[in-house]
Each structure stands twice: as structure tokens, then as C-alpha cells.
Length: 142
Image (tube, rainbow, N blue to C red):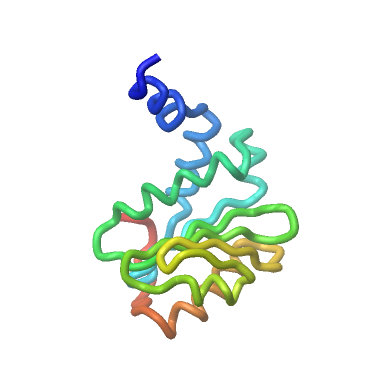
């Protein structure tokens, strides 16, 4: 097997369940000024048959949106809500520490003990309002 075939099998192969959970996550994305926040909850996993790991791919799509400084998919996870923060401009490491996480300057994750993704989103917005322009909700990615 040549390296390109190995890469294709590892990085470009998914399931219908993964496609569906990413679609729901994208549909649940809201724009707040220069931030995009996406939410996936347990009912979305039950509806699609996908796992939390399969929903992680959404971050790559969120990062393609122009004029956005921070993207944050929030996912239901055992013991709280899992957040992944990405930014090419803002040091999101300090933000992640607020939620018990950490990582590199532009690539971090954390957990919040919020029991609902909507509560975690409100916590995150309170922290982000001191860091970037949140403007008004635009709704959806478009």
C-alpha cells in the first residue's frame, strides 16, 4: 500500500453517523461577532447513532468561516461538556484554563461541569466578551 492510500484510509474515511452528527453540529452553530459556537447534545448522538469522537471533525469546518477569530464546538460528554477552542489570533489557552483545560496557544480543550451545552455556551460567552468582539448574534454560519 502506498502512503497516499494509507492517508486516505486514515484521514478521509468516515461513517454516515459521523456525517450526520457533523451536519447537526453545523446546523446548531451560532455566530457571535468574531466567534462561532456549535452545540451537540446527547439527543443529537441518540438521533444520529454517532459518538462524541465522531463529532470532533466539525471544528475543521468551523475554521473555514471568514472573519472569525475563535471557534468552539461544545459537545455533551460524560461528566460535563467538552469544549475545543481554536484560534489563529487569540490565545485561547487562558480561556481553556478557565474550564479546566489547556493546550497550545491556538489549540486547546477543556471540560466544564455544566450539565447542559447551553449553560456551557453562556459561560464561554462571558469569558470571550473580555477577549474578542462578540457583536450581536447573527445565527447560523451564513
